Image (cartoon, rainbow, N blue to C red; front, side, top):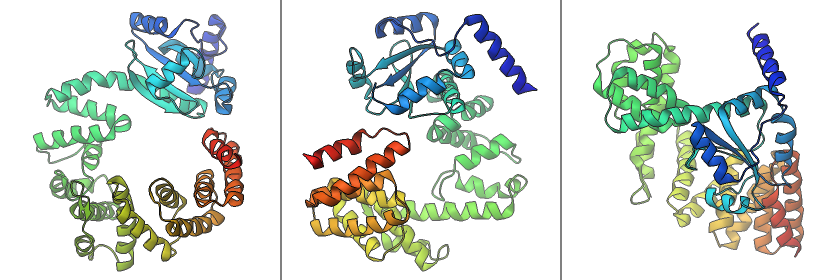
Length: 390
């Protein structure tokens, strides 16, 4: 019944307004910003390119959906600008637009409130607009928090606003809440706040988690809570072994701290995966290369995402051709069981660096095809394909 009511409301609005799509302004961008400032609304900017397939599909299938255009016409000043023509070129530079379609939600001063990317279904696209408005509402809350606000109801409200849009900030809110108040019982929102404020046994609220564990059992099954505590302890062992300032990762300390939590095999595999992420983050590519070669030599069947990370890091930061060949051999094994456009692209790039034009061409062509099958922007693999054929 509720869905029927919404449909009738949307139909009534569209009949009255005569709209069949999002109403995009025809003015120049500065005039659009002035209008947004005057009406106290956000600008929704559809940053597109004429050759972009998903952009065309959004215009055809999503912008014409009654629920979509009713929501966007009511809440935003809408603009649709080709980023490769006219003032679009300068806007692309200003806002760092290099993926199409990109969706920018801007205030009247031209400041970005929220971004979105790619082809989105109707309900996803409406949710993106809702998130932009929530983000605006959160600006004042964030200001009050930064000024030291400690009112418990305010902190609960702010947590509810930011838990989806900015989970790291929501963690800060929850940490303040539990540092200021002594609780014997927790409601559902407080359970969510506590669990969100603890990521590892080294977090300030871990002791609070332990002290309130009996109360948490009223909301969470004992088995799930024990698994959560174990994960906090594992994360704590990782945190204790990492030093971002020095770029050091103490393997022996990590293995010692996890011997009661993980099997020897589990601890080694986790050490390898965390180590790869850590050495990549700290740009210690010598250690990264050595660890990645160790992982590949053991022929661990890594998931495509981690294999893609290894191949990307090798293609961008490693110069040793023997290491290239090892990465290629491993990448092809993973690719044979689970091909992705990203893996195809990186295999092509590595072959290109090794001077194997035939195989580089094969995988670059495959990457372009797989990318287009997904309805995604194929500019990057097409650029590599062009480089190979020149």
